Image 1: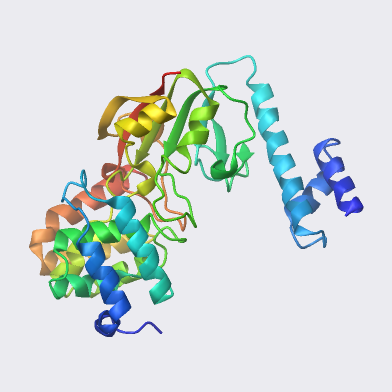
Image 2: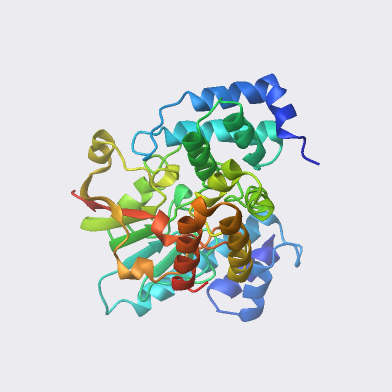
Length: 154
Length: 205
């Protein structure tokens, strides 16, 4: 069972990697972001954690002010294209956040990955409906994702 | 070992489906791994050459690099480490294709596992892609450019060293061949095409 992220960030080695990663060049548009540097930090983090689910670690780093929300969003995006699983170990955490629909920061991180969550568009639509009801600020993002996924064939 | 070598011969040269099945199922027939790997590589190369032979009278030659199990681009030759159709090969270890044979290479969502620190497109797959490209040929690279290290736009120095030039800056994907593909992560989750950008490189020497 994965240890709670707050405990993981108390691990000096994990915390050091997160701080190093947060200090690398970054811009919200991605043009100047040190993608290879962040990817290398993520590989170190995967090794320390023993898996590629860095969702809770990154979310806690954002909550604690070690990273901005924009950095957290991009770090999770880079994690999907690093490691061995192409994000397969991270996606369940992102989908759990969306299903819970109780923490706007989590929802913002999960919706910004460029990957449609849930294997089934009907499930995604159902979960998004609950998010829109609770957090109308995400309505445009959720509705756009449903529309584009339909256009792409579901 | 001799028996497995003969099996490889039967599979590759004699087109024996039973021998091909044996090579395609590592462990089942008890053959040493290295022979299975060699046989599989030979089979993939032969399938690729067969594909090339079928294309001999047509042009241009388009390579769908990282095309997955099978290319979704009409007329393109799939090249992927997991290919079941086209050429199964690891681009970081060299492709079984002659230099300068490809007119165009389409690389969509490149993803490599187990790479060393500091890996980018420039020091993993791009040199081999450039080798098989003809002078004047183009490489269309598509991905989440700000997130995927294997789609990073090379620097001017890197481009010069590789003999490439940037002919189209990163922009929203507008090539219908790429848009029409179903794009998925390795575990099958669909990728939002609106999150992707493309840029184009050209071989200058």
